[in-house]
Length: 261
Image (cartoon, rainbow, N blue to C red; front, side, top):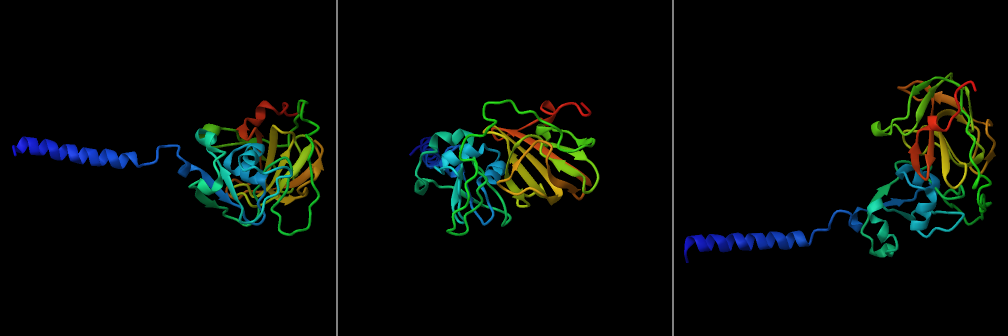
């Protein structure tokens, strides 16, 4: 056989094999890229949704979790990236997912109630099974504490909120009326944290506290003391404050009144 013909045949066979192999590879955005969070003791639906940056109600819907969004240790919560939302109805048994374990044993959650992981058969009091009173009203925000803004919101730089300086033990107050849906220290990077649900759209968070005064399920009023400012470590004494709209971080300065007004 002519050497040139042989070479062409060999190249054709190699290319055919490579293309065949590529045909077996899963495309970008395949089911294997879905994230699966395994619930541990202390996790809540709100903190899980906060961790991954999604609306709690959306995560609950993806996983067919009804109100009051009770979750259990060992349960697998599917987190679906935006490009894979069309696959959300696929039965869990058919989903090849990557398992992400919580780095701590206390705290993560979501939904319209602050239900933590159920650790016993004793029924818990249901909170917020009806739409929030603020559902169809504008929220009037106030500063969560007095102080200078040390670090402003800068989402492009990974800054999802702002840091407000102050004194150790300084009062931290609710920026608006709402229900506490998380109170603990299970979310890495936030220290002692409180998350408040204001309605089905807005949540606010208060991190790096020395002491938490409000617990999950508490109804809080704007200006009510919920914590005491703490020391964040390298960044010193401060409050880390965030507002999220439908799970997405937004600039708090667009919502807060001018200081002193």
